[in-house]
Image (cartoon, rainbow, N blue to C red; front, side, top):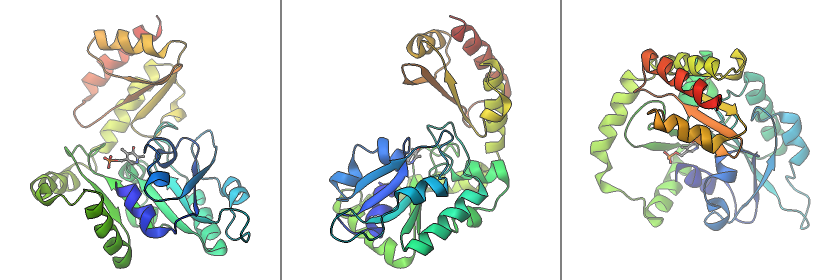
Length: 274
Ligand SMILES: *Cc1c(COP(=O)(O)O)cnc(C)c1O
């Protein structure tokens, strides 16, 4: 809903949003940007999920007359979930900002895991969000709150989002008590994301992955039989998911300590061995 409202506030109907091939806005929102926001989504593809400015610029169509759909927005996911929790490099963010200004298009940050990028790189959150007109952030992922996401933007954009939130059935009067847990998460759990990153590295090593391939708390493992490995892990009390027939995804979270991570790593190594 936060992504939907942010993009809604930024763009005109009948225009297009650019996103990475594996991005949440393109793949995991049930076509909501088409169905509700009346925009199309066109994608570039990068092995690490990066918003490579060269790839993005090749797609940009800010104004080609009444012939081709007008690009209104570039959406960046940081960290990138399906690319394996990858952080967008600083030069990428700067390059996208420069492109957006030069071509007169807006930028949306899908920052469900922007705290992970912050903790991994030490880059201040203000800087990670600086190039974006809107952002969504999630408090229920690595930060461990039971529920809660926010849409960020200037006052005018947020005013529009409030109307559409209500219109779409998200005018949730009772959310305040849950927001207390979000405040707790922000006060106490941000630095603890580093533990999740260290635990993911333990799991990644057991899966035989190169050290640099895991940047935050998501471990993506290529394997011949993802569904089988998921079942073998589950039988040993370790929950991982198959995100494709040959791709397995493991995520560490606030409730996992390093002992758990070592146990999960052993179970995963056995499961991958067949
Ligand atoms: C989970 C997720 C969202 C949406 O978060 P909600 O908790 O459903 O609001 C958006 N973007 C990405 C990349 C996500 O992983």
